[in-house]
Length: 403
Image (cartoon, rainbow, N blue to C red; front, top):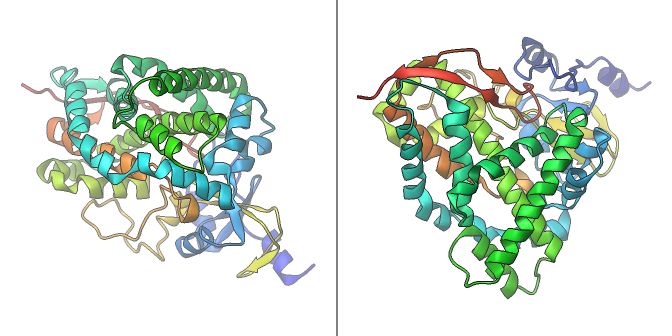
């Protein structure tokens, strides 16, 4: 056995497949101090900031999440969609799909919608501000994230509950309980595609507006690289599902962080211009996407690790962004200057919807901080497993009632 093979065999082991495993556990920090990588049931976990930053963009690696359904022995409509959609494509196909989608995700569109994001946040807070308590996920995070998507797509907000339920069920596929929830996941995926097909048919039959879906359809009509019908359906499902699931979870995680750092919440209330910085800092310390995945397309050696073609690497942003080599003081601070986090991935597969997510969460957090004074837990939160894509199922909280 080579010295490199011996070193790999002696590397720390983290059981990422265990639903009880926490990505924030002391054993992860200990593994990071012992080695820049760890062995897992899913492949190699990259734990340190510098290595993650470099490997995220290494041309010898491709986007690896395409294999997640197969890794979980999952079949059906979700797995089929996952294999076709933008995130799972590489090279020319990936570049073409991004070019066609880019106009619909433009910063200009997000900027135009900020007043609507603010109006929506205030409307939802009005519903519970006088009570002095709320279940944050049900009363704010879920309806806010879903109604933002309704605004983006030009849908009636009365649709939000149906879309939120479908996205929530589909989102179970991104956690470590994927296999056991497969029937629910596929049923929800079928429902989401039924919705997307009907929506596209309805919008295509009339004059197009300036909403996301109209921009996507118009760009597609005018391009010689036009999407096929299935590609268009896949893109719309990705926009609805991705926009709801990640923003809902990230807002819940943000509130959990701030409830544990009340002085930072008071600072944000005093200085709402820190809203954007608050989003970035929350996503550094408590991202909903706790790791991103790459797969080796050739045999190569990185530092002391021999990486065979087909090896899966899980790049643990949660661990990397508290790495003391990159963050000597990694404590939560919305005023600190930080290296970039990895909550939106990186490289060619950097999240296409990051402008939207940053825009709607910035508005939400600044307004929440201004209106909800002295927030605290009023019960025990219920959480998804603390790895993969994570978030709160419920988050009961109290605050000083508005008068």
